[in-house]
Image (cartoon, rainbow, N blue to C red):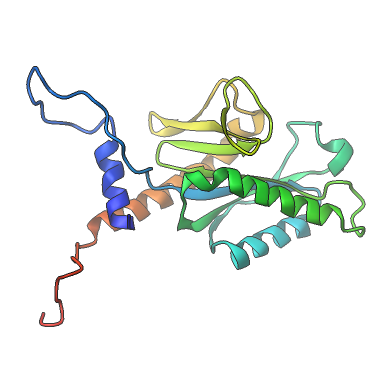
Length: 222
């Protein structure tokens, strides 16, 4: 399915979209639809800003261009990582340009885990774990992150990887869930996610405005 079809399918699948009634005996059975338009979001933190730069370059070289890069934020909400990653942790987010298939989330988490391990074998770093990388994706309605940790609210994907809805878009703003980590509840984080969603909305709107050119249609005479 190309971008135009995917975007239109997402609009059609919106439960808040007005629908025409088909009468008392309307068929209420759900139908299988394509996933909504999504962009990949990568979260990373490190005590060394040059390591973050290394990650963004590697993603741009091997995966997709980066269309949005957040400011670098101090990551002070948790002491859990201090023993392996050191003090003065800094967190940053990137949104990749290519459309993203959520079915790839578990494979991407495993790939990022491999990148983390590769970097941890570099003896030039003073810390045991130079970087933490959390891949996820954003649709118009939610921000989803991958995790290796099982919790009651996380859904198992495959190969030891789980998915969590970290933020939901309600009432025209990003809202935390009961389990959302404190840093993702920060207003400055959510300002960036609002910018990312605005970018996604413009992309979806642009796709919807494109004219349909059927494969058999000859446009050379126009």
